[in-house]
Image (cartoon, rainbow, N blue to C red; front, side):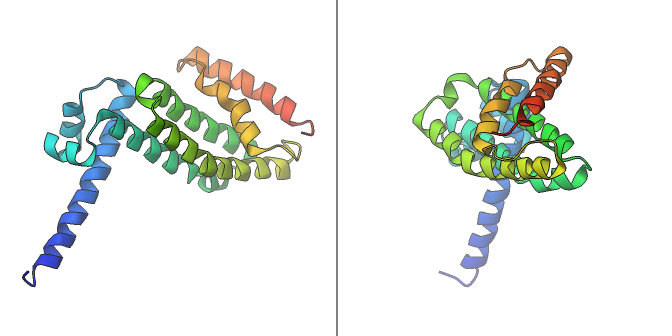
Length: 191
């Protein structure tokens, strides 16, 4: 082994990490438009070859799960930022759940690929961070007086799940907003 080997190895690892992120981000963008997009298009958008894509993600399902997990991780990390950006905790809550709905709609559009045991494990692992993020939003809404205390974040997630069932159209968004108003009327009552 030469003195240059460790530096070369570190550079290769950094390049591999950048490639992985580029592939996941390209997959997110392309899957949002068409869940059945060919993986060759994902590789092309990411600026990598097919071999690089398959080294990181041997199957389509592996890539779908990585993109989904990346999106959920990124979203759950934004609860504090969304709360800071809005004067109203209720407005922040609504924005955050609408973003979550967008991610979930993407998941639902991927069909059978997310019904495997591996997929269920990824979804299960996302509950903890999602629950923590929702807990922050719920606490802020309680402090603001927009929600009564005592509501469990997991229950709130289940209650808000209607958002990823409404169509991603102007009419669907309007319907979602009407339903959110109904939810807040109910959350104003003690749990």
